[in-house]
Image: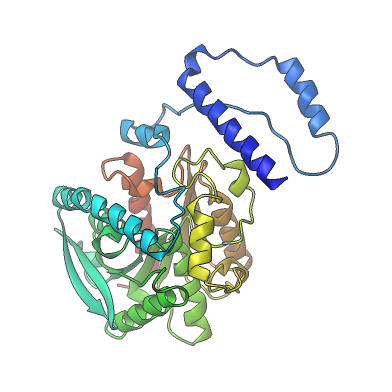
Length: 369
């Protein structure tokens, strides 16, 4: 039944793509017939059936953001399934090398410098803006990059750190944690932990914020749980953007936004393979893999970010609910029309400027000076 369902979903996606290309010529559906069909399909308790539909691109955003929303799927990243470790590493390296020229150009335009370093025995990068406001001079951002635990090695994983430095006006340390296939769990978490401990050995933790998107968001939350359990001082604030807080495909938008999100597209793409590669046989409900199953009491003030088309919107909403139930100071910002982590994709978009401006505003209210 699963294979039939997946085939049907693929067919529906092709229908949607064809419809989208001829959006202006589309004939409105016969609503009375559709009403009868949907009433019959949903006349009893159980899973919800929905008809194929075309979702228009919003035009009340800036041109750069509109282009992100309208963009086609990101191939080959979203549906990658390399047959072995060597093929995984070849794909990751290919995508990483392709990202470097754009990052160099963006840093030059934004006035951000980058310098490789080692923090707590872990490879890292220091990103520094041209000017740091007086209020931020003693503060520090610790960045844990995303990429499904497989993408973004080395300098290719520094986009978020660059944007935080540029639009927030902070010095940023971006950890270059080890990743599978060579280094599955817990290597990434060990590196994130070691680098954080080294940072707070010389910087007041209340002047530090931890920022990460997607995998980086999930790791940020998992790191907080690990530090709390081990009695290590927590940072002044955190910003887990659209966090991969549940690796078990639990939550509405894993299905409602499937084929709508033009970045992740479907959990049955590379995500499921990356999860298995990283977990390396560990239970996906372990809070160090899926922090949504941990105890959030005592976590730092948290700002969360997602979009209405984000496959991980439910991950983000469920995380906010748990934080609120635990009495943690938290904010949730959800952007119209935005797929997964698109605020990282175009430094010129109003979306990007707003997200990192909101981070800076939140940190101004919670970090010590």
